[in-house]
Image (cartoon, rainbow, N blue to C red; front, side, top):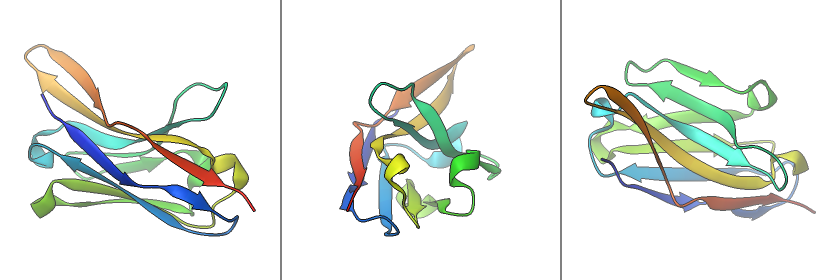
Length: 119
């Protein structure tokens, strides 16, 4: 298992920046994949950005060039730097960790944090 604790988020004007943090309860090297999802009202949860334990990262097309996922291995923490924010980025953001447990791959989630982009 893994526990994920998120921080960051809040209200920002269009064009502004925010950084989200996600601290894991175990070494992120032991986690198959870590990333960020978001869910806007009335919409399905979608992948924003993620990277594998090997360090390969991928992004949703809608955030490429604006968002950056990074990690601090010593702190077992993953970050999402969000720049040039748009109103359509408004959503609840969730940290995700996919862990191999026996024959299964299980998903664990952070508590979620609201990001609101509005003037």
